[in-house]
Length: 135
Length: 161
Image (tube, rainbow over all chains, first blue to last red; front, side, top):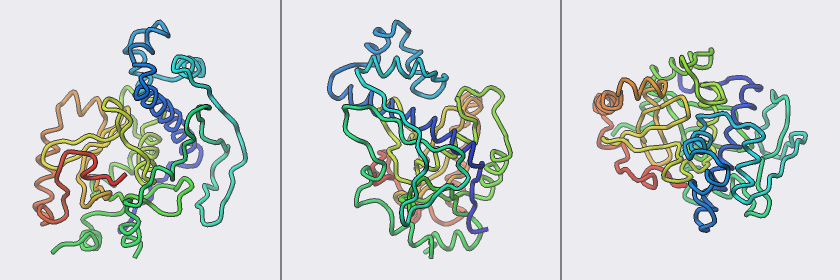
């Protein structure tokens, strides 16, 4: 066997990746706010009147995030949430998950630098490795 | 000198892929040993830890982790919050709330998964040392210890992004 496709189905994939993206956005926002000296994790906990461990568990994914806790975290960081549902778009040359049952764009915080996955990829990435493996 | 293609041809490792999220091609590569692939099959069939802490299922967590890895997403947000951690002996750990994956980097951005297990089991039974030794032994058996093995404990040594 030269390759293995880890396929968990469209519904599970959609759920898992959405949960992951929400967490990543929170961590990215916290990281940026920390760098700006706007807030620390301890200050976040104080502002929300919870123990620091509660915030820690929410951010590590070891505690469930409710819509309320998500909104609270965004408020405490001084951020605004943007959320929308839309039909999946298929761009030329892009892979498309046909089994996805619901489309949603990335949750992002307004007023901050717009985040796009591809913008994070530098020229040093490994497309050559990918091409070699395809051959 | 052994190449990645040699490892794939001999069945020592297989390429791991997940459904892409808006990407034309992978920016990193993932491989797995036959044992790890068998573990992944169990996971896809619904295997779960005795007490799951994450909101997503274990399989969903791994799908998300692998998708992030392959599309070249940042794996480290802060020192405290990260998906990847260096072990000794050029062994690396990929993390989700409930799952741990251990392996090594064949080349930069090219990771081979050797062991997968539940996070609480790894911690409770202190499996880190055993995994490090087993992975080093496997590299020696495959003859790649000096060639297809990235050294260094800085994420920048193994990831270009």
